[in-house]
Every structure is written in C-alpha cells, then in structure tokens.
Image 1: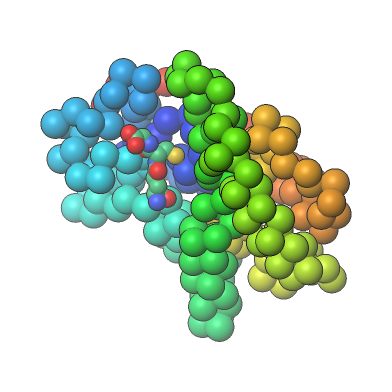
Image 2: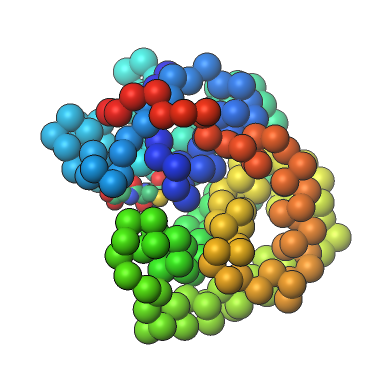
Length: 209
Ligand SMILES: N[C@@H](CCC(=O)N[C@@H](CS)C(=O)NCC(=O)O)C(=O)O
C-alpha cells in the first residue's frame, strides 16, 4: 500500500491510524508548498487534488475517513467495530464531524495554521468569528456526548475518535478554548497517551509524489 500524505490536518488522522495499526504502508510525501497536489501525475491518483490518498493493489481510495476505515478493517482491528450498530455510529460521527465540527475547526486551522505556514497573511476575523461560533455550538454537543464515555462509541477506541479529534492537536495555535469543554479535553488527553496520536508522521519525507 502507498499512503500519499502531507504534514497537515486530514493526512494526520490517516498517518495516526496507520502508525497505530502498524499498517504496512509506503509513505509518499506530497509537497503542498510546491503545489504537487495539482501536478498531472498526482491528479491521476486523486482527481480532487487533495491528500491523503491510499493505493492498495487495484484500489485507489481518497477521503481520509474512508481510508482509516479501510486500514482498520484490513488489519482486523476493532478500531472498525464488529457490531453493525457501532458501524452506523462511526458513520454518524464521521458525517457530523465533516459537516459540523471539523468544518468549523478546519476553517480556524486554515486561518491560524495554514496561512502562517504558507505566508498567506493574518487570520481574517470575518472568517474566524463565525467559525469560532460554530465551534462552540458543536463542541457543546461533543462535550455532552462524551460525559460518562471514555471514547466516542462507548468504551472502545474507534476510527471515529481519530476522525473527530483531528484538529485538537492544533488547539493551541487555533486558540480553541478547550478549557470550556472539560470532557473534550479529558478525551483528547486520553488520545495523547497513544504514541501514534502524538507522533503520527513518518520521520522524514521519503520522496515527492
Ligand atoms: N475531505 C478530504 C479533505 C482533504 C483535504 O482537504 N486535504 C487538504 C489537506 S488537509 C489538501 O490536500 N490540500 C491541498 C490542496 O488543496 O491543494 C479528506 O478528508 O481527505
């Protein structure tokens, strides 16, 4: 398997799952600063021009949430739950995350992290303020859900935890007020006990795509 990645948000969750599972992937670094996602070679792998992408034999899979489910299922790991009702829960939280929670934190990540990484200017309050309002709205939902639960889906770690927590390692840079949400902070502290979560990326870029 080949995993195309860059050291940014969505590839982070895939690299973390691959490291956690010891998945036999060859990491292929894609240099966003050099615009490599727009190269004709890369667009053949992912016509969306985005990382991450996984290739596994004849299968080419884009979308980080699909990739982490594939890696977990292939490894026979209960990160991809055995129970059908729990699989629906994975779908629910992944969908909620993409449409609400990480939609808000992703905007904050762009304003506070990506703009500074690529010299794109200061955060724009017109983008930051509504994203922060959305963060509060959906963080309340997440915090309430986590009350009395160790992980998102009961007491077992699943791919949903990797998906929904993806922006939290950048909370400081993004100025997320996690102190207002003690259950989220406690849950993320638990994820931080995993070496794969703390250090998801391979040691050095292997080669450009
Ligand atoms: N929904 C996609 C989002 C992928 C995405 O937005 N990737 C960003 C990095 S986090 C990217 O490749 N940006 C580079 C570009 O757009 O050229 C997923 O979850 O995989």
